Image (cartoon, rainbow, N blue to C red):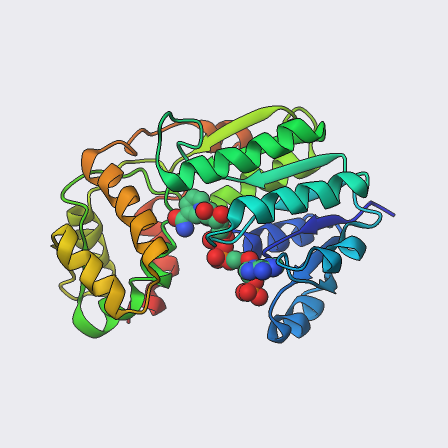
Length: 288
Ligand SMILES: NC(=O)c1ccc[n+]([C@@H]2O[C@H](COP(=O)([O-])OP(=O)(O)OC[C@H]3O[C@@H](n4cnc5c(N)ncnc54)[C@H](OP(=O)(O)O)[C@@H]3O)[C@@H](O)[C@H]2O)c1
């Protein structure tokens, strides 16, 4: 029987689709369940489920046992680097042969932003471990508009960001997963770092126009000041460290520093990347 591939973060924006696409290709999957309430769904989906918490390294021993290929993500937490280093150490002890790591666009930029530097530090841990790797460095996810701004769009027909009219080449997480699955199941992706973007760079004004067309309602993008953005996030109980991290990212968006459109998704998967209109049509319930 074919070896199982380990998928971390299997209930998240990217991991959900990595699991789906691997299972659809007939590849056996082991998942790491974090919340107890996800265990049953992951089992029903047909994966072998191990319960663990990256914050408790001891719980990871069994998870890597017998595994040679891993889709590895770390959640957005302030101790991401320490968490990543521990996971790499555990993977090495268990004899893992290939890590496909979910990183972020601009991880290799200098000086870059805090989040990029954290991702680069975890990448370095992987490089130093001697385990073969593929780094996925996606731009911001289209799914953010459903997951984080969906409620605001539903309730107020508006979303609020300090991003000016900067353009961003947003990528759909189904395409990020598609690249991950290629790297996990085919040869030739070892030692590569793939920056992943969608097919076009869009300003938030354009995003609001597409969302308006798809929902049949007038959806507004409100370009807010940094101060107002911080205030809104604080009111939404977002911790200070995360507000700082996000403000750096929005500044890059505003400056157009994340607008490059690259052919990588299609080069790796053989399929053109999903555009924002298609994303919005497929997620329209999140905006209604
Ligand atoms: N959002 C973006 O636009 C974007 C763009 C580029 C890169 N990234 C990077 O992508 C990564 C996040 O990926 P994502 O958006 O797919 O994830 P996500 O939707 O935030 O989901 C996180 C996943 O990790 C699991 N998890 C959380 N804490 C855990 C813990 N302590 N131990 C074990 N598992 C845990 C969660 O399980 P439960 O649900 O059970 O807690 C969930 O499956 C981050 O490193 C981020 O920097 C994000």
